[in-house]
Length: 86
Image 1 (cartoon, rainbow, N blue to C red):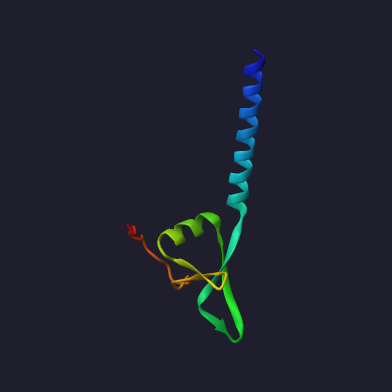
Image 2 (tube, helix red, strand yellow):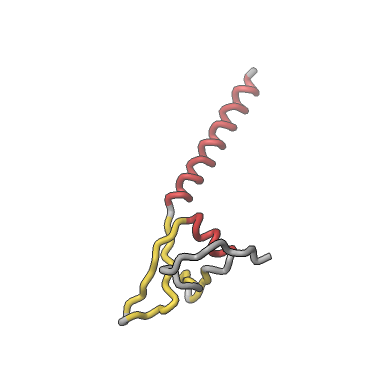
């Protein structure tokens, strides 16, 4: 009985930690700088969620340059369904 109780406690703690990580990842945003880069001496950027970053990175929509994330397309234009790169 004691072993079952310990397993349940460990499983509950692992589940709780996993849920905290999922919620933290869903709430996190990233700065993605525009294609045009330097406009009037200012860098323009959009904030995107973690899920959007995963999709954009998969379909080559975001590239890392100089330690920053840069967009590879114009984010103001509505995009249709993208084809899989593989």
